[in-house]
Image (tube, rainbow, N blue to C red; front, side, top):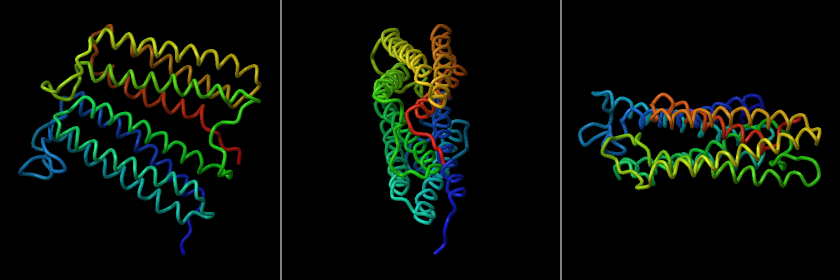
Length: 288
């Protein structure tokens, strides 16, 4: 039976992580260019063609759909290699299958998005499932670098690991409220797409409060980390704080400048970077 080295397995897991992050941006590109209904059908592009690149909108939507094939290939490779990795580990096999489930869910939700004319609830679900998928891929990549199959959450000083829970909750709240703002704002993927009926200023303020609470807690955690003399954790929290501040600055700038497309795109990249930084704080690093 063929075997796969830990180094090769790690490389494939890194590729899978990169692909599930990148497809968030390609999906955002579809929305920001108004190409959400460039392909009016699913899984075909339209009633007459399975693949259609005759216009700019159809081409952008088609590229996003085709990139889903790249993501699918990377997660299928992750599952296959998890069985051939030497030594085989049950935790890596389960996490690899988690990627498959996540991608299948995204394919189904993507179809619902198109067939419901870019329903905001479906769009919101599409992004949040992407965040879950990124988390799964990040944990898998990090676990592939460790010889310990049982430790997931970062181990800190006695009793202090419980402080990671409010960080996760506040960060998730910031992400969720951010998606509500997006589903209320102007960049829906098509000018006729249905939006949430909330006042944009109200949901933006709610998101702003969630962001400020999250940043405040990260600052608190950064101060505590220095007292715990945990260098790795302290560096991870400091990185998170920098990313969060940049992301907050982009968010406020885009709001007060009329949400220009370029800043919205930067904010989406920032959201993925922020969540990766959160994962870097929450999940145990390899010491092997």
